[in-house]
Image 1 (cartoon, rainbow, N blue to C red):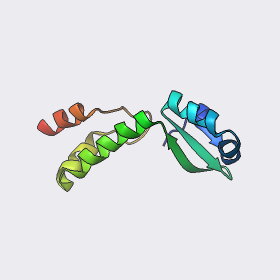
Image 2 (tube, rainbow, N blue to C red; image 1 turned 90 degrees about the horizontal axis):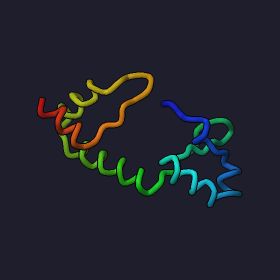
Image 3 (tube, rainbow, N blue to C red; image 1 turned 135 degrees about the vertical axis):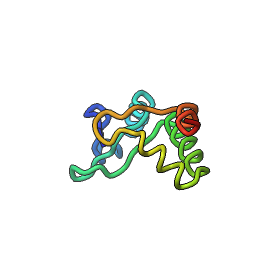
Image 4 (tube, helix red, strand yellow; image 1 turned 45 degrees about the horizontal axis):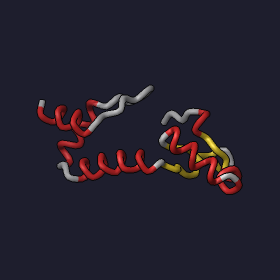
Length: 94
């Protein structure tokens, strides 16, 4: 998992500066909250949550075989491409 430095906030910053952290998540889509130098939680903007939630709901509707086929097309390392639902459906049709 790649985490951009700009998207990292400490647990204490989250507690002390919630509004600023929420605004940062709106700007970046999500922020990672660190506790003891370990990723502890993620704060999603509502738009990012809706995007991810839609994808999860779609994947849950697929059979295990269909999900395996999709997973084979995704990069294993490095910068990951973002896939829309339409792109995933297109991949399944091939």
